[in-house]
Length: 499
Image 1: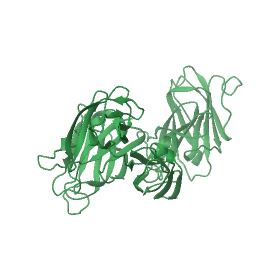
Image 2: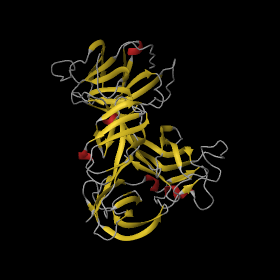
Image 3: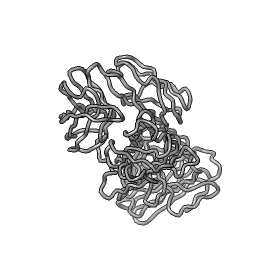
Image 4: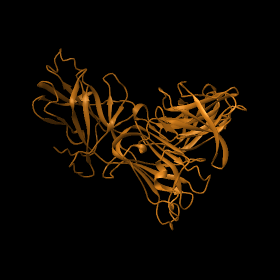
């Protein structure tokens, strides 16, 4: 059944009551929401059913499978108006309420609406609000049904309705991008005022410092002022900073940068992890200063200890540094690693506890080109920051005379729920061969783009961490350069993690 919407004029809600005796005192259904403007009743449980309520911009369609209910049951569907929920606004002003308390629909019903295309760089998602809730929560992406045809600039979008509560199609917040902030270094135990610059900060933008949200003044879509209390700036290390648009599960997080608090003289100072991810039993090399001599202690963000192993030294981006190894113990979780000795402590960057899916057996690594036989394509996804992939001589995105725009791609053997993407800049050359800005895409098996966003790759190391707000089932992750330093730019790693 096709729905045709005209101009929007009323915010409307679809209220669903499903149960034997629905509408009676015994049915235990939630009271009607808003003003009822239309109502129909049908039976579900023995054959497919579909119902359309409202006209024009109010129209909404609900479809039930033949086994949506365990037994034949009446369904009362009401169309109502004038409802509000925090975190997002329904794209058409409409929503579905499953009014029977504690009800589960298996398989779920399907709600369909005709909507215009989402705003540029935005996406429609399914949103849910519990019976007693006051805000929307994301429940996956809205999808276009197979065979649906756009009409008069409108297209059909569909979501699943699987139980009690309110359901709607909403426009997700845009993903903000963090370019830089100042100051970038400071002393422990002092309050800070951070001036944060970037793009796409909306009216809900909030700065996070060391994993905690802080009071944020929105000065413009490209500038924020954040007040960091001294209680959050208590120790030396690289403390994470990011920005979120939206609230709850609908929030969209920017890339992560780090504020540095200098360590005490003689205390450990961490420069890098190699690799910067792993699972229980994997060996990790720590690169830094003051790792030898005093007894070194290592722990994850929750204080679970790891035992330091052998120490050594190596040249890292032109500097001779110390190293120490440890094995990831049981119970470790993703987050910053802390290091301490008799002189003081230091908090390192975020370490990903989990399998880098680029290391999955059967994963295929491909790229636009490679530089000679030395900086080959496999080096860009070998989970080793010492090695790098560089594109061929003459390739770049920044000069029109370049031969090819560089790209790098990890293709998994099967679709996976992707929750995090990381790019690590090359550690072989301090400057001259870096990517500066690029596009990241999650792709289906047929290369359909499921998600896409462009990010700056910040100095000094061009590392980037992208945490998705909800998992996206994808087969491939692709990075394409949009700005770079010169010909033959490269990277150390493109990493992919589950949710």
